[in-house]
Length: 333
Image 1 (cartoon, rainbow, N blue to C red):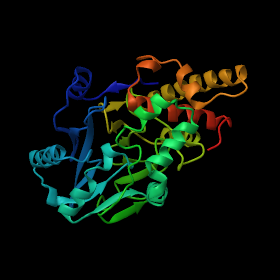
Image 2 (spheres, rainbow, N blue to C red; image 1 turned 60 degrees about the vertical axis):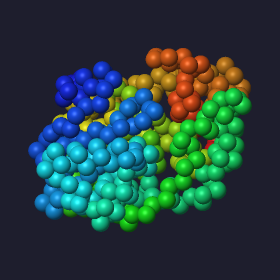
Image 3 (cartoon, one colour; image 1 turned 30 degrees about the horizontal axis):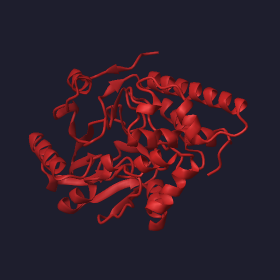
């Protein structure tokens, strides 16, 4: 089995060197346009511009800010295009670093935001009260977060941010073609990170635009939430089976760098998940009851100990621990 290998030396060097890569041609008629992801260790989002007969299809335009607007406009100019040529803004999932610029682009270009139908259903179908600070605080308290940690968790910028769309939506289901791509770009259901996360397969070039589903080295966060799937980890693992059947030559993720070796990456991610599940099972055998917070503090960490996690990492780690317990039937949402 082929190993995971970076395709672009420039992107790899930028990631490992702590910088942001430049605009880059990544395939025939396909470019990456990096935009900033402020105050986050991922640092940037790789937006992708695809030249189609009708104009440009733009995938994951990144965090909404004036800086990123200028980066996108500048990047499009460098490839001989402009915002007015965008025919569809495609979003893999509703996280700030993916959809934040989508409405602004759609308004300027007079186009739709293309998003997974399941993503729309679980997110926009919620009442705003469910995203209120009181509701979210109660949720993390139920997961076992102590007072000091709870205060830090609630300081993260997207923990209780309802999604309010101004732009018209095109709801896409797995297997369907992205508008204006004449069937060469199709949606692949890859839930787990969010309930309706989609990846997109460029069938002509064997490219998988993977969003956050299969990053080259960073582990995809799969968290239990108060308003999502009761077992997001199961959906995440099941989606791997779907990807293993695809003819993919290169993976174009939303962060880090593009790479080859999708099967190897999936095998590695599965192994990591199984190791953590085995650890959680062992913890459950040793304790009659255990909270997600306690599990989160016990899980071995490679990069830094739990005590050194920042507010965002603490929230994500806590949600992940809850997802492992839910998968094992030891925590019911």
